[in-house]
Image 1: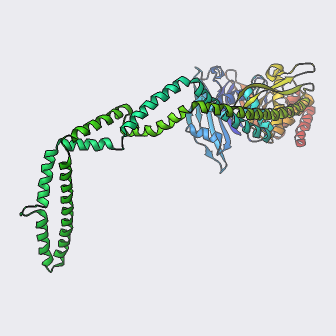
Image 2 (image 1 turned 45 degrees about the vertical axis):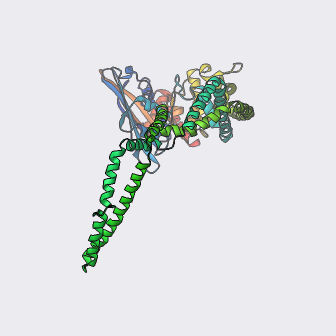
Image 3 (image 1 turned 90 degrees about the vertical axis):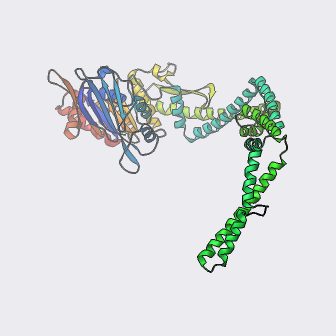
Length: 562
């Protein structure tokens, strides 16, 4: 919901603040006072293309800012957060969103979302979830076939939603199956070649039979064998020092002597040191035994073992060069075997998938037919309901149809939805935008919005001169329906008719003023006698006519009949 708008140097408006609020806001004023600039300002604020000619003559730039009351969670809040902006918290459920846009006389544009600079595209992203604008020549909602289909689906409610979900699930599975079949059939030669290559690669790996970490172990073994004599001398010298077989003092003998000396002493401190020497003796013994085993291993190595190790390393080196690492080669045995089994199974798989496709195609056809039936039923109800509304909006002979026609299958179904209008008897229904005049189009869209508001609510609607070309009782019905729409959404209407403005709960007047050199417009909220006077002016052109004032009061009383 728009809470407030601020305009500066936009067209004839020098500076104006428009308090909006919930319900139905009517904007009136003298011809040329700049009422439509409100719609222009909203367009800029919601990402429409900036036109530098909208800047007031003599001004360097124009700006528009708006405050929206939005849900603290949802699509709007997420998009603002993605853009780096912030919402101002009102309570646990609602927040305020600040948007602004400025354009210079040279045509440059700058936007702000939630207090941070942002591309105008972010404003466009937010627009679909904030507002719907209807003008005589610019009907922004339902402008595409996809939008019309989506609107019908929302109007149809659970019946269409369930049918659409079932179709979408079947379509997803069917297309995935088609992709799998196409992959097998269209790349048959490449898959045969891949299988042959993979079979050879796996055979080489299996023949080599590499083990995890084997290359590192062989590298260490080769290093040891290449330096066997130096290593034997070092290990033997160390072993002799720890545990000598000769009748000479070694480490173990010296530790044992030191330990016995301390154990004979009566001092607890020396006894503790004796225990540490015992542990040291055990460790020295272990090391001596390990050195003995190391020497035995060196002695067991034959004169040709180094050559054998190097040959094995060469085999593993070939695998490493081919696959990047020994681990990758070993992993390929598992993944490659699975892939080879898949490729070898192509003929049988193709037969199975083809049979499955036939079954799934029948399921998809049934789901598509059910979705088409649900849409067709809803289309009839929507067309009848809107046609009934049009009779009350001075289009008594108009007939609206919602056509559901077959089209190429997509994830949304096999239906093309088109909203058609026959404006008078004998006329063939044609797309709404091509069969209605500007004033008729606004009323048609109003009728559609009133009918759809129960199942497809929109936060804010803006109608720019929806009353064009009508008057009297038809204008009263337009006002009544705007007020009805305002029961579930915020409605803002730029109007010339008192019959429409009478149903608003918030009435703004745009007044143009000039000092001979500068022309500007101001906006003020009307209430009480001021509102009656404005209504009288709209009715008769005079603000003090007793008859017009009496008529104005009668119209204002109609709002109580909604």
